[in-house]
Length: 155
Image 1 (cartoon, rainbow, N blue to C red):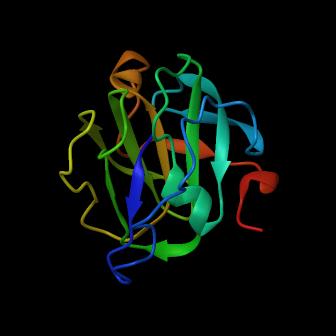
Image 2 (image 1 turned 30 degrees about the vertical axis):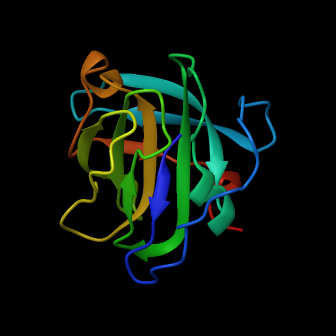
Image 3 (image 1 turned 120 degrees about the horizontal axis):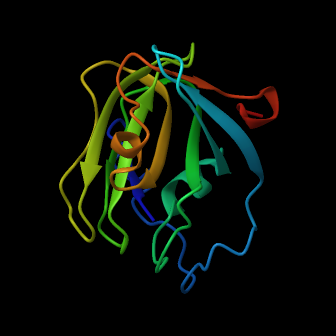
């Protein structure tokens, strides 16, 4: 649902798809990731993989809902400082910015249809979007880890 706004290139991600509503019909590849807290708690998510510029630009835009055990993993293939906004995103989301080694650097809540820009201070390699409050409900956040399988990484 989120629209990725590339800060380095003004037009990268600025247009998204010109298509209509996306109902999450499985057109993106999926993977199972595991989040592991420093105190040992674990949570599993099935995530859609946004690995190309077009997939990242489209994100979760226009969707009406997302299941509690689902999310979207944005894979950048290297460090980035790209920001996220919710211009055409209807569902409230939380986002985790993740380092290349899988450590969660920061989480932020994002409000539907907002043009506020979200990005962490340090560069990151992955971003994980879930329903708003998911990280809190599972006791996970900055300093915890995400186990990302090889098939979920950049192509």
